[in-house]
Image (cartoon, rainbow, N blue to C red):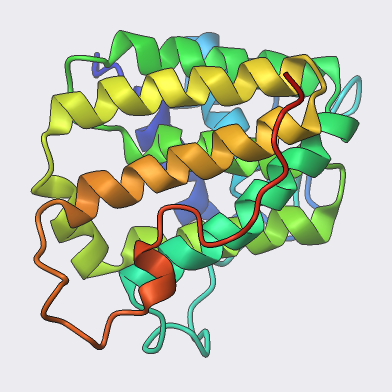
Length: 248
């Protein structure tokens, strides 16, 4: 296999092993070298797979100790599965992820920033391709994890799990201009990381809000919502909350 996204296939294979009970919560995974030999791929691919699995909450990478299993199953019977539509999810993200970005700016450490820059590098390689949902998920979950608050990280992972399984959301994003979606998303991610690197919570919050606002505009530009009163007006306000502004 030579696909640029091979790391996702490896991560999926490991998740399948977890769900089948090959490894249990608390178990230590084989070494990077062993996994590389098992799957017949380079160690760099294994490292990327581990980063993805950590962002999704399946493993804990401990320096000088190894990789340990944290969970073996995805959310399956959530009370939200049949209740939250794509627009409610986007609304929730605007309320939750903007504040998480602001908090992350005060807590983020060098290793978190290194992971984010690595994700940006992967996104940059795919600018002329459809958006990579796994990289997008990884980017936002890594920011949540950089708050050093396990509950906040789990909340964001959960929201993204619901989002990635929502068929209407997938349909809406696929109907967007895919390459433009990738290019604009990458530029917006760069702005968010720059604010986090400056440890500027106001800028991080605003950058995240604007990123999600732009996603909303890209997706809803395909829809005529003016004649659909069932949509929450909050969603279609440009800035429904009075956000703090950066000092000039």
